[in-house]
Image (cartoon, rainbow, N blue to C red; front, side, top):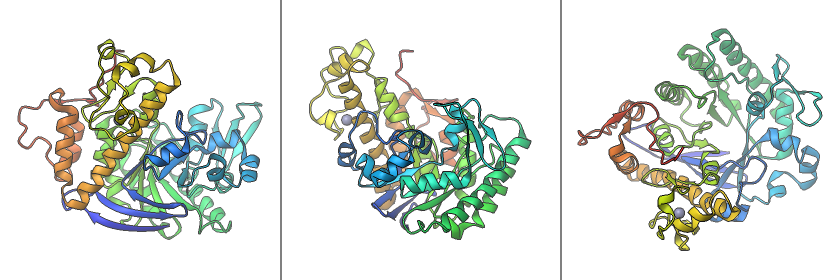
Length: 414
Ligand SMILES: [Zn+2]
């Protein structure tokens, strides 16, 4: 991997960088769509590439179960198997083990779980996770970490998991270095430590000591239902201390306001199933907030989702009325809204990159929040987080209400 910083925001910690991987360049900050089963639901790889997406995520846990490593190796790796010519990132499989399997038991050796197909006890070790990711052939691979739910109040368990994640990182590094795959595939460490400032610092220190052996860093263990005020402080603490010359990846972040706050705090990459999943439930993401196409008010609205949007759905004249008619019923509806939502995510990040390069990122943040939240009120945590890096969203906006919680102005009927 070649990682080059191209521009820095003089006010916030945002930066623009170029990450050169085996399957081309990816400009950061970027949002990575999630192709869980080697397919983004509703889209072909050619459609995704045509949107300008250069990096997507596959889930190791799912690909290891189906189609399995043997088939992926026969296919020549996951790029060829799914016909995706650009960059690919795989997770370690650990998160799904904890979230999907009721019977996972973590030991020092690895994660012991019952196969969802046969019920057989199966062990996923750090070495095995790296071997599977080698067979998949992703450009960026993740260490196996010991994941504890974000809301756990068992500090001893969080501390044990953090220390074990460091030990497992060492095992992943050793296994990766002797594989001969290092020039093709890039290993990222995952910072753990729950919501505890001291544990995060201890994890950061130990993982930064291993900087020469890892290509980048992820911030893990967040986006699990914790208070937003705690979330941004953890991101800020980690992003501020992680090395300047390594990409920083915040796992499981997908709301536009979360993405922009994380970018301002120094994050370069993020992924989430949210934009594609919410599309299938009939929600289009727009500059003015999410639009619930299921609502009756769209039944005779013949305008596009967003007349200024360059996505294939908005430019080919597909109306809100038509989408209201088919969304959640017909696969064509999911397809059309998924296309739109991925373009929306790409535009949020693309415009952030342009603004950082022009030295106008604070102005972009202010304009985005004004349009996205408007009179519905700014989330307090966004105001506080951006103030911490020198941007006052409320400057000249004395009459805008501040709301607690996520503040998302969901147009949901339910
Ligand atoms: Zn669109």
